[in-house]
Image (tube, rainbow, N blue to C red; front, side):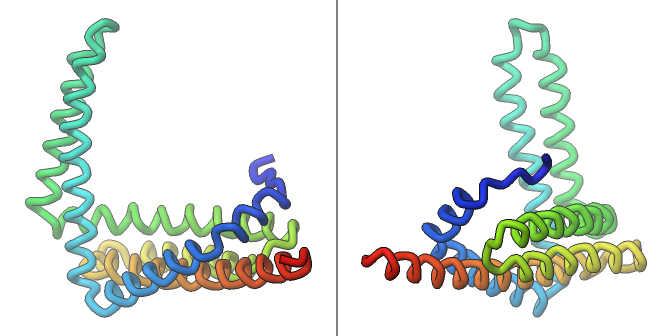
Length: 196
């Protein structure tokens, strides 16, 4: 089964780490609010990070190519490394064109990620895990946002990436906080019931 969750194990992990869920949720809320307030800047930063990640990946791939000499993959690894670096610098040098394509990819990622969260929430609900409704809301929001981007693409590209990344961060942050708070309450109740 795709989401074969061992309820007791997952619930215990969530309860043991409830503070991290709250902390990371608050960080995502702050980042999401900043991105929503400045969507153009958030788009440029998102695209810039993507470009630099590709450049970094290209250098790592190039370094790794020296370990592929024995199986004859050296030249293929070097070609891939060069393509990564070229793609990264192309993105960095032309963020406007990149944002058009990144917008389509982000829309697809929101639809896919939202769908996964919907299925996760169904599995959580079936195992009586706390805050499954918030995870469902985050998933449905992701699907909605992805479809909304596609409906206005490519015109939606100028600030869409930043705005939508902000919305996703905000909703996921809120769901993380509620999941953490719910797990923290359950953790303290169990601890109290056990006499500790």
